[in-house]
Image (cartoon, rainbow, N blue to C red; front, top):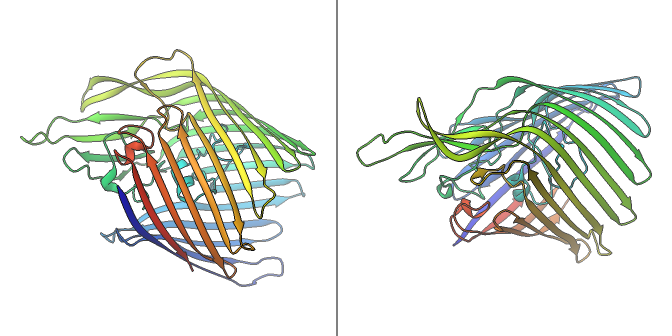
Length: 422
């Protein structure tokens, strides 16, 4: 099936000087506007920076056909610097330790967002979280301590994404900390945001770098950030057998230790992230009778996760080739367990430019090592001016129903996106 859509991106930047060492900046973006669904995402951003402190406010406002705004928060933080080596930061922000290009195994507070990674090409992102951090930074070393008092309302897969229309969502749809109620006739989604839960998590980390080597050790005790979905099935609400099915996330309090290592050798870079975990919560395919219906059973497991890869700066304009593989091994593995989303995956990317950087291109592919479903995203863009570009992107999804990538459409699908960034 072929779908054609257009995404229009507008952005404006302007700033003013209020103090000699402070340059506030205001930025407003329409991240994307889907002409087919009439959905837009507005991202205003205000930042103030000085030699001793910085402040950032960046909400996200999503507007759909119903003109009902959904508010999200990319960042709301205050950072304070002192003594040349001390930095404290408070608020909601993204924290991404580790050295992996796409899927780090030491992102305990902020998990990687593979679907946003697919949408935004080569820009690896993590979801924001409510954090307080203190770091001591030396010339070749650093040490830090982080605390997360709340579990934030973040979605692993944005349901209003123009890449994954709601009409394609199936019962096997895997989500983050949003709850979706699906009717088994039309599979329409009605997200209901969960309230934040108080569940304090702690993490300590220390790192060292010298020459081309970079290494860090992270210890974590707190909320497990790996998503796994359990279903709650309610009895038929009508004589026609219409079921309300709620897909909810499964969390657990786990302990983890991770190491992140990387080495830069001229145009080559190698990295490996490893993590050992205890008491990770996963869902099974067994059902038991709960007071509100039939609920999927869960259990805890132990195991390790490994991510390794390399990148090569090609001898062509802006050329980059990179390969990364993430694989998780579990103790006491049982048939029928449902493991976290994309925990066994391989990624490859090729990017560059031609005609004296008049055009940029990228080819990004994801292969699930669990069911061998495939996602290939090819993109070409033409920049003009300082911050403007027109891009043409074609994602191709190959997989059967209930596979990691095929579940979004139930069939092979290609979609064309034309993006204007003005």
